[in-house]
Image (cartoon, rainbow, N blue to C red; front, side, top):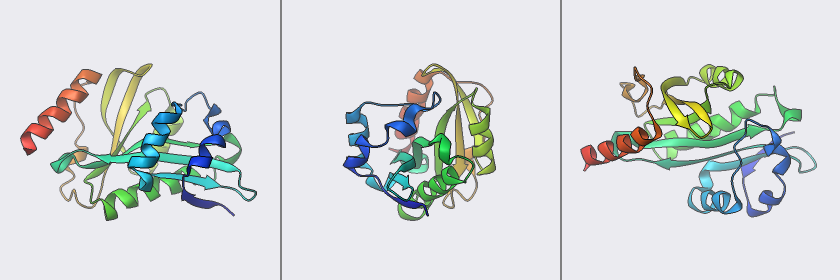
Length: 181
């Protein structure tokens, strides 16, 4: 039986095997610790009997006004545990926290444009490609979004018609912050 629980510091020493997938972004310990300290509600692990880590999700809540949203920083499942809808369960947990506890307008995530299986999975979960981001990390990324119950008019998921650069992501956040001030 799978147990989904909050991530804890000891898990940092036990989850390396889950991160071996070439499509999984890995970070330094201080990055994980920051998320664990600042957004503990958004950091969960799935554990198999015998306490083997099957996968995890790490995220945060950020933004202001109508850009207040949950963000999936990483979700990954070890190869031995894929095709069991574990990623779906982890995503639904983060969406529920974003929606019901933090009253976010949407959840977003970035996925490599070349990662067709992940994009297909996210689309099945109700995400749309909001915009393409050029030169993000190691290539092109798709910014995918899913509107939550607070966004009644679904304004947060109206796709942009052209790709953007990482600099424009920052400018977008600044203009949204200025508009909400």
